[in-house]
Structures are given as structure tokens and as C-alpha cells.
Length: 306
Image (tube, rainbow, N blue to C red; front, top):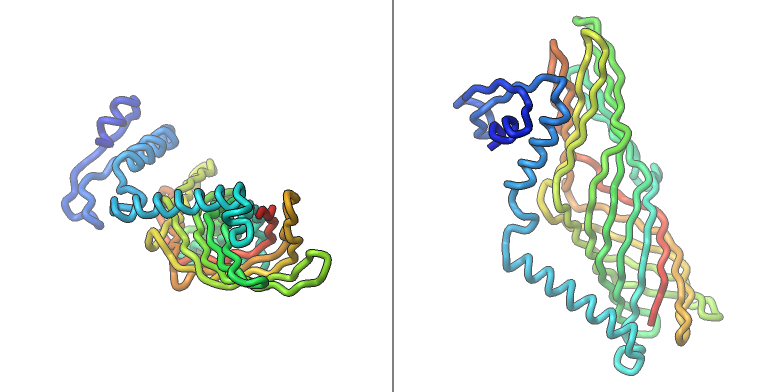
């Protein structure tokens, strides 16, 4: 299939068959560096067309869709019908800004192998979503929702080889990965008066990663010209999170929406993200694998509706 794509795109190549390649592979392709970007694009599109669905089980896929639809329906009913749900259900539209706070564990991580030192540095990320909360007591709620996140990283490469007399520094300025969170949080609040409250929430969540991510760079440095790659992938398609929140809330009143401003923290239980760093040049090719920290922390703003 890849060979047919290369021929259709008029990308020159060489290939041969090898029965002993790792991971069950069978064919190797050689592409001129002058056509590297076109070949990588063809490879990624082919991979996207034949990869397994995000959720392989049809039953699980439809169950997730039905649960999400049910949650949205309840949100609309709770927002539009004061008589039916006005005293019990609360809907919030939320946005988050994840910031690299070293104090809470969201910090650069460095990995080393065979002279290659790679640093993954988290950058500011964004999140948007909805939260549906059921108030079963005056100062207690249980909430869930759906949150889309964009995680951003910068990757720095340093390769040192005293035998070959090589020392290089390269950077991939941005790798972006999309994630979905479904939280399940119990929240309590302490009244301050005039409709203001201090709130605290804790619980677990589900993290869904729709796909792996790949990004590549190239440095033209004469005899030391090199390409460098970064992969970010999921250990499993769904992981369990620990989640906490703390903030200040202004309760909605009648048709007037309220607001919430606070901070949040979350982290997956166990390893849920793997990363691979590759640097490739004429005399060498170095590959390093590791697990990446999943801590997220930042500030959050919500618009609260009854």
C-alpha cells in the first residue's frame, strides 16, 4: 500500500524485503532526504487510513455516545426548566489554562541514552468543556462533564559523541496533543456571604487519548546534517486520573449567571504516556524511550447556570 502511494505521488524510493525485522515488519523503504516531507505526509495519511478505531468495541463506543448525549440532554433541561430541575441541577461552561508550575510537578523532564539528551518542557495549554452538577444538599454537589484539552510541549535535543567529535543542539518548538477528560467530582462549599462561596472538590476522572502524535525536524549542517523526531503515545486508550479543585464562586441568581474562578490539579494513576526521541544522521541513529509525567495544573474559569 505504501509503495502504491509513493508511485502515485511520484516520490522516488528503494525497497527490499526482510523477514527478520522487529515488530513483525517485513519491508524497508529508502527515501531521498529531498523528498522526506512528502514521504512522511504519505506515511501519516496511510497510517490514519488503516489504524484501529479510537474505541475498538462498538458496544463501548455507543455506550459512551449515549452517556454523553444523556448528559447534554440533562444539561439543557437543567438550564431551561426551572420547575423541573432548577433546584437540583447546575450547568457550567468552563475554560482552563494549564501552566507549567514546577511546585506541583508540572516541570521539564530530561531523558538520556547513548549520548542523546532530550528535554521535554511543558508549555501553556488550553481546555474547554461543560460541567453538570447535581446539588443534593445546600453545600454539597456531585459533578461530571466533558473537557477537551490541548497539551503542548517543546523538545530540546543535545547529542554528544566524543569519538566522532560531534556536538549538536536542536529544538522542536511545538508538539501538540489532544486529550479528553471526564471528571467525577464531589464538591463542598463554605459560604462567605452575599452569594459568595469558597469551594473545594476532589475525585477521579477518565482520560481519553484519541491518537498518538508525531513531529519531525531537520537541520542542514553539511556532513553533520540530521533529522530528529519525537513521538508521544498512549500506553492505553483510557487512564484513571486523580483530580482536585479549589476556587471562589459567585452563585447564580434567577436569570443572572454566576461565575467561578479557581485552580486545579490532576495526574494519571500509573504510566499513561510514552515518548520516543530519535536523532538520525549519516554515521549514527539514536533512539530513546521513556514515560512522560502526566501532571496538569493551572487556572480555571466557569460561567455558572441554574
